[in-house]
Image 1 (spheres, rainbow, N blue to C red):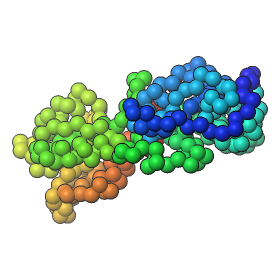
Image 2 (tube, one colour):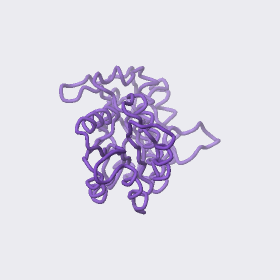
Image 3 (cartoon, rainbow, N blue to C red):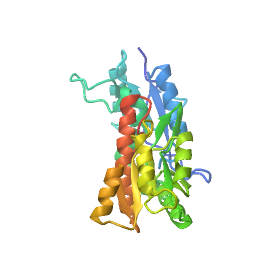
Length: 294
């Protein structure tokens, strides 16, 4: 059992942006989280560098020293502390953390089984709902969607491999994907792509159809034959969209087509659709891998 060390809270004080980090800062305090989830909280907040808001841990539960409270609803006294905070904070900034939906009380905001994958997204929702801040207000430079992976104890953005023999296309794709919150790496041939995929993990591949030595269809077939890579989505970049080309791509195992030149809206829709599927599949495989926010 624990007690909230909060006497009053007259308003939310959002820390202003700095020259090094232009994002508005919100202070997060936890009430009752165990050591494991305290550590996960610290790791996720520390590595959420591409989120439109900056969240930092508050070392104090005193008056005015935090903006958002995470309350463990599963321990003795948890619901009572949440009620006290709710009254003191006028219903703003209280994230209830639990293990399941409980009919005896309102639905929890954040589930322990999805703590790592959903923490930042949940905090973002609270900021936008209660503090009336939007991502565009928060960050003047291009806003990324915030898809992140928790892998081997680290937080990282999704990675894409772009395979195209045109330096111009590689540069354009790299810039566009970065604006979408995806780290893009590029190679100029299918053989380079296979070597790269053998050494490093990616969440999506964009491959040109027409390349010397090995075309995009053959590359896709090689990827889909590899048991370790079979689930990797391959998006074909092509200037052709005839039914024959679509059939060839489908037979090779292509997941989607992008007809060049494409629009940013189309690229975003295709990329996000496949990334969310990949991250959802990984989340099912392990509780500490998945989508943090979107």
